Image (cartoon, rainbow, N blue to C red; front, side, top):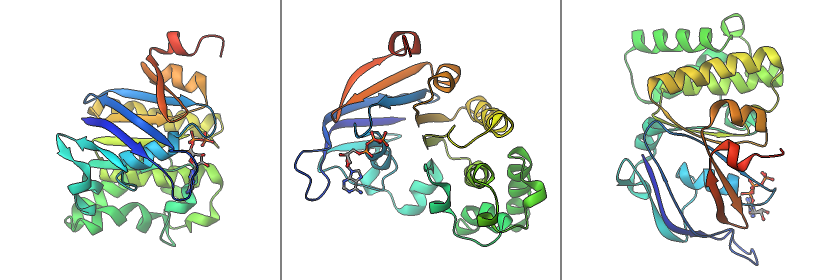
Length: 227
Ligand SMILES: Nc1ncnc2c1ncn2[C@@H]1O[C@H](COP(=O)(O)OP(=O)(O)OP(=O)(O)O)[C@@H](O)[C@H]1O
């Protein structure tokens, strides 16, 4: 699904490269967690996988195509991203319009837009706030608006940055039900997480990043001992 081949990445003006000769292959339908210390490069790697940053060397392929060659609309069909701060990805003044937005950009038929948006809102526990302003919602609901937008688009590769953050037990249960549905559908999921219980529940493969390189790649039992 995703092949990362010897990529380097440096932030402008940074003294050190952020990622060094990093290679990684993720198979279709795999669920992979990225762990590592603060500043290890996890969020940078996620942005590179999303095609929002370009590597300074090396190549990323998605479904055997170079990611850099895809147009924004092609990327949006293939890759969905949930950022740490959901409000940074909310563009509309109404929850319904926000969730329907990606489908409208793709010019899907109106009946399909309505059906997929309604289904996503119901799955994410947002039916009652469909007409609300997303920024009037509490932080967990706002995050679920971003999740519902992903659900409506149903991309085969889902990238999540600290997804379990900000959820209480109710919203975490809804989020985990959504995640289980994505897996059942056959999606590939890559998530940064510092939440080891959440990681153990959902990610059979864990990759540890240290100083811009992959330092470990194994099961939660191997990597999350004593954590
Ligand atoms: N927009 C940016 N501009 C310049 N440098 C950045 C930027 N974002 C991140 N960095 C730097 O890149 C390095 C890796 O940061 P990154 O956020 O990718 O790490 P991380 O592993 O996700 O950390 P955390 O767990 O704290 O989120 C850090 O040294 C950070 O200061």
